[in-house]
Image (cartoon, rainbow, N blue to C red; front, side, top):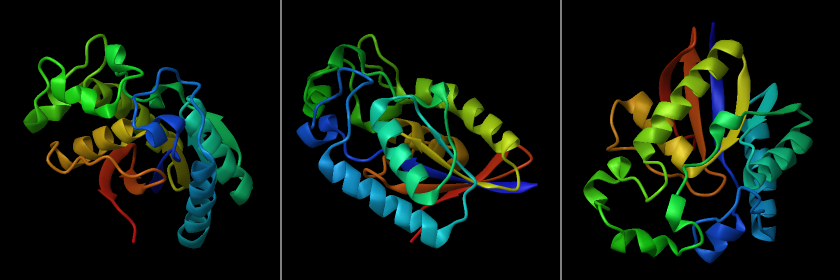
Length: 191
């Protein structure tokens, strides 16, 4: 009763390109992002045999998932719990704004909460039950799950038992989450 969730970070968004926290869930992927999504679909086709694509509701993830689902001829569903970390008052600001925000500690980035936003620990508490539910619903299957860097870092921390190795993957970076009987067992980065 084991399975695999193939976690994919969305392709390059306008916010990623401009190095700014996005102001809206409606921010789209770039032309470079479209190329990345096609490449991710080809990699998934070579390495896996997924049955479904599940995605965050945010446009950048939806567009990435649509490209992958179309290329692999798979059905797609939206999972609202996979939305990205809220950066609250930092929306629209350059990424570097975190370094001058009160309370930011690069040694404990997972515990830092942007003003009116979520910490990575908040994201972990929100998304781990979603992944456990997806694992229980899709046992004995491979399923593509398109989400966000913060979501993927949070689930990696949960599986590893700590934040030390919880890196944010690059756009269309892939983590492979093995599960059995609804339990998240291991997470690896494919070659």
